[in-house]
Length: 204
Length: 204
DNA sequence: TATATTGGTGCACAAATGTGCAATACCAGG
DNA sequence: CCTGGTATTGCACATTTGTGCACCAATATA
Image 1 (cartoon, each protein chain N blue to C red):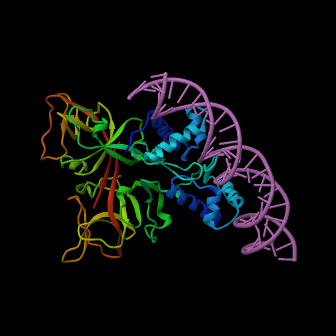
Image 2: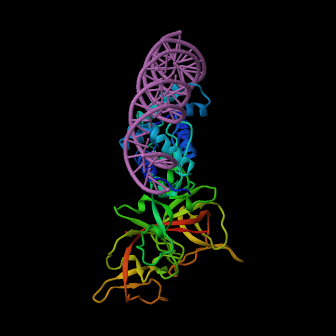
Image 3: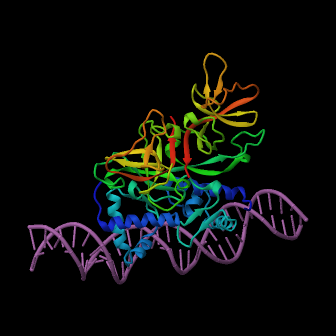
């Protein structure tokens, strides 16, 4: 998919925000108003460019814009789009664009509190006693700290892992919810990336 | 909320369908076309009625309809609305309107195949070894049969239960995924209501 | 029969909306 | 300095769209 100019990206964002607010798409005039410019025609040219670049679709009728590009699809009334983190590139923060595989829609019920969220596909069976299975999708609220016994996503030596955080008298450690796995007492650099707040499983 | 006439319900449905197809609301003319009538004004009167009855909202601009009533909210691009089954009234089929507590949005990823779906809040811990905990929301595909080892929702003497179906040589039975619970060999009237195809958990 | 409710037609009109053209401004690169 | 790409303006114009009115038709109800 071709590159777009900063102005065009701005317009895509305005369209998405407008739809989130009103639940129907803006007219060219509406977009011009939000950009504080006076020309519908300028908007039209940007829209035309976005359509031909495959970011947008439109019909002949009024307010018929439809966003195609996944990165700009508006969060709908009952759902939010959060980034699904794929392979984590060494050295990058977990939420860096480089790590985003795609965006996935999540029911708003799972993300009540303000904050940044991301999703992660669970690998391995180290948390089965907590009801977290391989290939489950966990919804994570971004945070650099957590409380005792909360289930967290941690980054240990550029490896992402889901475990239960234990903070008692001694050194904090990460506990698997599966007797077959040992507790992890992180040695070198490690960090908490967030708390697991939800889970979505797809049975086949 | 006040009652609406059959014609008004028809129009609400047309609006919802139109939005699902095009992802933007119809004009009065569009609605008139689908009803095969020629009058925009007739549509306008119905819309006005629906607004005053609280089923619909509209702004002053073109194509600014917004459905308020939960039963008619259009399934959005990435999600579907499925009924959450509350207490099950004796004698009613599980999907009867009487049993619907409310509608909940579910990511489309969980409901790929055609069919009727419903959601159920899990009670008890009889399925914890299958990673299904109390208060989890299970997404169920309506079906009156199921295969061996599938997790099903069954109705036994007007009681709803989630268990694993076992069909081997002998009589089919329902197996809990928790050693503390015995297998269930249904005696009297019982029926399979659907297969569990997904699960959503909210951690606090 | 009279009357209210609901639904539809045809026409008119103003405002919203998309489209098109010519001209200007800005900025980076040659 | 010139040139090309991007962005904006102002104006004009045809359609779409919502709104309003007078009137008709079918149906149920008093």
